[in-house]
Amino acid sequence: MAKKLFILFLVVFLGSSLGLKQVGAQEETVKLSQVAEFEKAKLIKPGEYKGGPLKEGEAKYYKIEISPGYQIQILYLSASSKSDDASLEYTLFDENEEKLSFAQSLVAPETKMGVFNLPSTSQDFLASQVKNRFLEVKASKKDIDSYTFEFKKVDKTDVGAGTDAGDDFGIALEIEPQDYPNNFSARNKCGGKYCSTDEKDMYKVAVEKGEKLTVKITPNPYLQPKIEFYNELRQKQKGEKKATEKEEAVEAFYVSDGDQNVYFTISDVSLKDYFGSYAMNVSIKTATAEELEEAGIVVEVPEEVVPEEEIPTLPEKEVPVIAPKEEIPEAVAEVPQAETFISRIKEVPLWLLIGALAFIVIIVVIIILALRARKRPPKPPISPLKPPAPPAPLKAPPTEEAPLGPPEARPPTEVLPTEPVGPKPSEVPKPSEEGTKGMILPPKELIGK
Image (cartoon, rainbow, N blue to C red; front, top):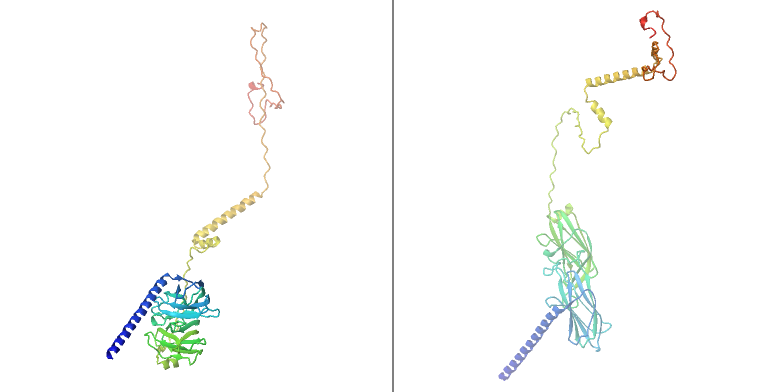
């Protein structure tokens, strides 16, 4: 009997071992085939896509790029099959072939199906990095003739930064005091319909000693917010606040004991799945004396300086202040010529100025005398003396007549000059022989010649 039991146990053990090996081999084969399909997957952008046909068990793969703070949504639109009980599967995988989101439904007009993934900023998924996701569309039961789905990339980033606030100190999002109306937080266990890892948002603010940092959160109906503070040494501080129910606004503050970067986190009170948006207001102001005392912070007040007793002093004589001559830069406009001439006259010696004035007076007197001389009547003109008349021409003395002969033998006769043509000059009266008194008369031998 014992021998039969031992043989039966051995058979069951060997059978189970063989079965496990076959299952492991099948899983390894599937995983290897998925990796090969991921490498050949087509990259898609937000929009609608149509595929098919797919035989039962056959799958089609698509590649999607995603950044922290953006949610992937794959929504079923339609499908067709010759079988009434045909079904379709959507599955999202990460780069490590880990299943993130899964959905399965019958092919029917009323079917609503989708898969979702919202990655957060974490140490292994920084804001500057882009991760790959892979969508598998599979005909899980019966053949599928065609299918259509829509890919959406929805903005779920924080404080308008284009990314998700980190969940740790090294990747906390640094912000300034102001209003931030659009922020998002969500936590869903991956493997089901939703996969969200944005379960905590951490922020960093610079605060000075004695200042009060106030944070107010106003959530949507699906969140029950919680606020926690940490100092620069990353130590949790007092001042944590929790909402008592969903959609309840909560406000918390922290008084800084030094100049430092203060961290605070926003999360949900519930440890179950949650998601939703929230508005945030961050403000900094000087803490009151009561708030400082309550926080146990002593702020040094500068000592008041008491002025020493003033010793009365005699009033000092006022000394006239002589303003220095203003230097005129070269760029100033030129001084008018008249002003320059006057200024130059002031520099001329007095004796030279007096001599110049005397010279001017003499010139003026000469001009006045000349003008008066011109005003006297002119003297009568003096008639010119008539020149004396020329003496009358002397007559030749009578000559004896020569005997006539032939012309050749005749002596040349003297030709007397003829009287000039024209009016005769007036006869000058002959002076008397005796002459007038005082006149010297020519000798008598020359009279008549």
